[in-house]
Image 1: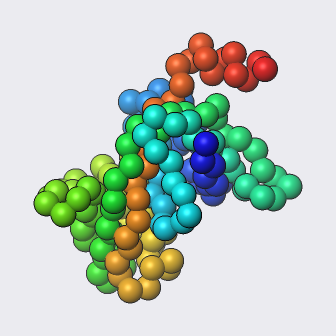
Image 2: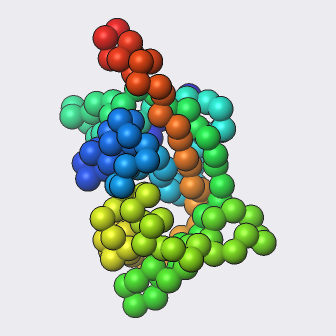
Length: 145
């Protein structure tokens, strides 16, 4: 099982995805840079706020990883201009605004500002990890335990 830590701004979109995965603003994915081990499709994930701090808490019961794909984000002049998900021959995403919202941002502008500082060379290569929340009944049982 792999754990991921999220900033406060993503708690509500992740919780919304648990309650209503099709709701506008629901977050069912994360973009991550290289690390020793990432999730594999079919395994459970642990999603935390403020991991390794005294404020640490699990955001939702452990969802199942659905998909892991390479992602490249490119921007110019402070704005994301292209996102490529998948392997070499996959076309770039054309609806960047919808992708930004699916990743827990209110707009492409907000996502662009978030990503510009960590990657000063105007490219980011990492992984897009998607998950499926557990069923509502399972979530209630997990919370009661």
